[in-house]
Length: 210
Image 1: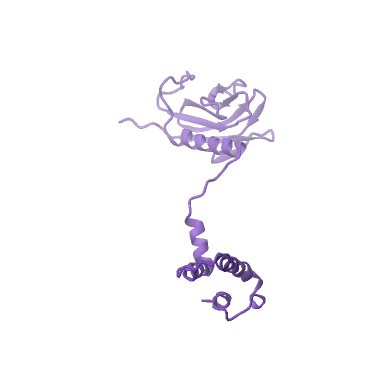
Image 2: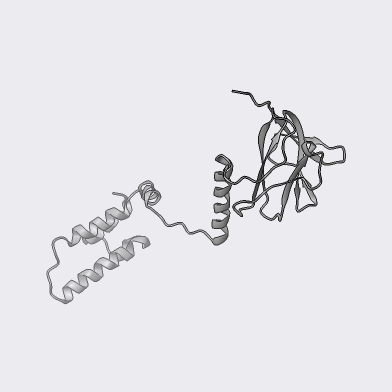
């Protein structure tokens, strides 16, 4: 038992006066005095367990900070999120689920035919929550300013499409709302387009036959 709780125990035993106790122990001592006064005024004999209950309270107060911290950390708590934080968290989860799992094959959007049957289907993905439309253009469509449209299927700001590309290196960019040409932020390589802008670079490996 530390010094403070030893003082409280001595007070309960009548060995110390209230003024001799530290300030943080006086509320406990006054509670004890009120209990004793109430019992005395009613001429009732104090239960034999009274001191034991008071000392149980002292032992609780004497619990180490480490133990109190562990009990706080392991006690279940309710976490409240603001609507904005919850919406952003939901959008992040949807983005992870859509990108991590295979693209659904049911009801795919029509895409331009590939120039070769030896290429591979490539998925283009761009996260653009504020965009009204997104397209992809590059050397595989002769830099068509309309490009190949992407779709935001879930309304979550995640735009996607699939294009069958021939093997080799391809340069491409995304077109936002028909005017802004933006390189792919997820591309592993970017090159200068010669006009002060960047093009994304994509390597398509030949498709192997089984």
